Amino acid sequence: MGDGEVERAGMETDGGGEDRISALPDDLLCSILLRLGSTPAAGQTILLSRRWRRLPSKLPRLLFPFPSTPPCVGPGIAANTAPVLRHVDVVCCDSPAGATATWLHLLAPRLAHDGVVYFRNTMSRRRLMAPHRGLGLASPSPTFELPCFATAAKLWLRLEFLNLELPRSGVFARLTEMFLEHVDFNHRGRGDFGHTFSTPRCPLLRRLRIAMCTGIDTMGIYSDSLHHFELEFVPGLMELTLMAPGLRTLELLSCFYYIQEWNCSIHAPDLESLRWGDRFNIGSVLFVGFARLQQLAAFTIPVFGRPDNTIIQEFALLLGRFSAVYRLDLLLSYERANSPCHSNCECDEHPDWNEWEAIVHGLEEAEIRSFRGTEHDFNFVALLFLVSPALKKMTITLDCMADASEESCQKLREIVAVHPGACLEIHQNTSGVFYEFRQSNFTKTPDDHYYG
Image 1 (cartoon, helix red, strand yellow):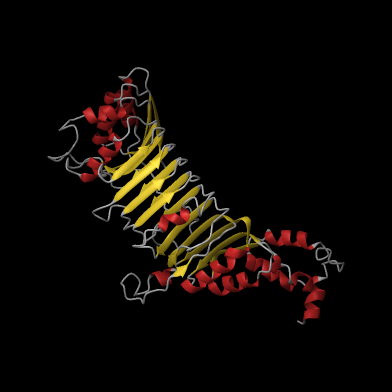
Image 2 (cartoon, one colour; image 1 turned 90 degrees about the horizontal axis):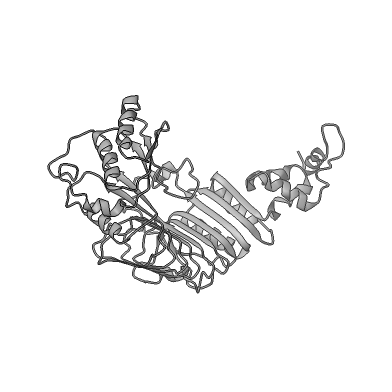
């Protein structure tokens, strides 16, 4: 079919009348194309008529949903001629490092003020299972410099361990939110990593997440604007300095487990919520401020272990750092079997509840999830009421495999009944999931085979 025939076909309707859609203004037609939710889908409309051929390249949004491929994404980015891009959402499969870096450099100067970039490179099972991966047999990858997105308001990058270096210059003048995941940073030994996220270069940054990243040993962030900071699984980190007077939420998980000597200094006088899932000792961790802390979460704590268990000891030191918190969230880990206590078990065979009483003396409300109905479970509930004189409400969600018989429920009611004024709520978990670890803020794809 020739061009003339294509155009005539597009100008006809089922009734043989005039094609009134093609006569609409460009901005209205572009609005229609944007509702397709995909740049490749919008590009297919060029078959309708010559009137439509120039429209897809003028769209201010680039949308490449999973499973887009490099031969589709690259030409799509290059062909776009819109004056500015307001929104970029790319989920590409198996993009080469060089191509990914090139695309980011093409996008950075074209972002509109307060533009948004979500860019994710996924790894297919074929590439994941390649024989050389993870065995140190692959040749070293080149390092690319991340461009400065001076006009972007949100920048989310998940790059499957692309070797990246933060921009040496430039100011992220409009940036309020930055997420960096699965990046191999080339900053070990340089000591300037945190400077990029500090006030001089990110004056408006309010939320920062750095997760599953390597190549960082020192991080110093000094920010007047930061409100929410997440640092998760950054192995090899030896020194963290954070000065953020406006910080409200801090989450730090699995960064210091893999080294012997490390230091962490956090100055956050307005901090309200702390989620700590890492090592803790008085000599290595310095908290300055924290007078307004309301919520403390700590993961994961073994319930029945040896008295010399370092995790339990460090958890006790963490709790001892705070005189009071409004809400305490704990993820307790213990065996599924209803096994008897061993000789070194810290249970009722060797009671020492003074520390517990100091921790939960003012506890008014407690919630227990994944209650399995073992003798340990019932003993723990009884103990909690014993050492918490102010406890007024207990909510228990039974594990999906737990005994939900009336006998078990009655046993719980009897424990609570001896404490006047306390109430009990019992729920049954039918989902099979007792706790979901939030591994990433990025939407999962079928190629998410590891690392969440």
